[in-house]
View 1 (cartoon, one colour):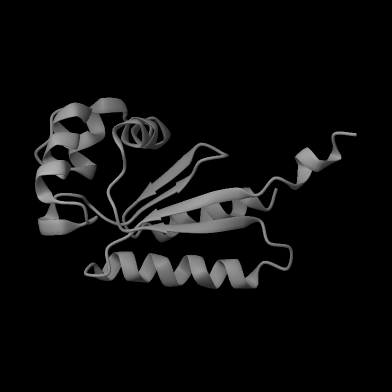
View 2: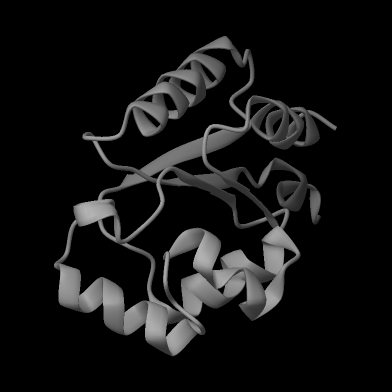
Length: 131
């Protein structure tokens, strides 16, 4: 009766900037992984807008650093509200003027996030989908 719950696919979100070589590298890696999956384990969502306030809080939780790690995502920010203000002031595109560090890869279903072009972290994120 509940067997359909086993077929729920993760949504992997990539906060992406086409101006960022690491972001382009991660995008290509994720697209390649998606095409290699014989039974598709995830849907890839590519966003060129920065994360919302709630998404930012969730990403920080997934990174394990809490609010203290916000400056790794938005340089110069001392909290989530300040990070959101910086991103709103910068405009709507992810990675604009170095305000948001891209790429940020998030597996919402499994509670994992990878910041930057961390090849080891990305591979672990993908491997966890296959378990």
